[in-house]
Length: 184
Image (cartoon, rainbow, N blue to C red; front, side, top):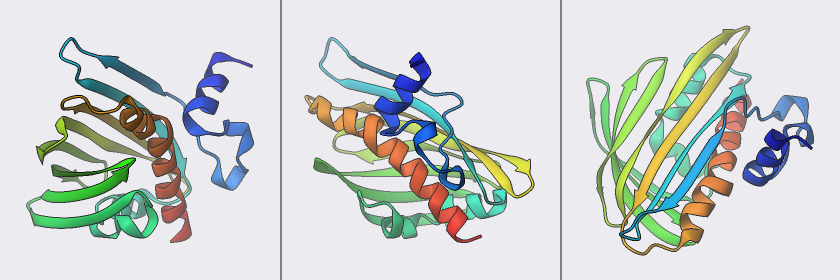
């Protein structure tokens, strides 16, 4: 087994070969880094790609429909759009990752190619920066690249960041893919 296959198995739960053609998850570029600083704060960073069999506008619309996230993301407990104007949204999220975590992001929407965010407020995170980059592959398909860097405050269990990067993120990408393709 190649190193990239072992990584896909460890991070995604299944290798690319383990998924059917219509639900194939592609990890063309995937990296993950976890480290503990001298202050005991956990820092996690990842970037992953997936090919979605849906037009870029549909994928973008699903990404920016934040309040519907709980319908297809099981760890997402609540979402509230605080404000939205001129391509900038302030959105509060509450997720359950072993423990309940609430945070508010400032999201910059650049239709149809990207959504970038940064942390506004959170009790358990000192930063949460990331975004979606979308590329129209023609023929009704879109390549979506999801990047995330999170720094957790205090002595947060490593299991929280491990679950975020190792299980939740690949599952999240798969669920966005299924949502977009289901609306085809």
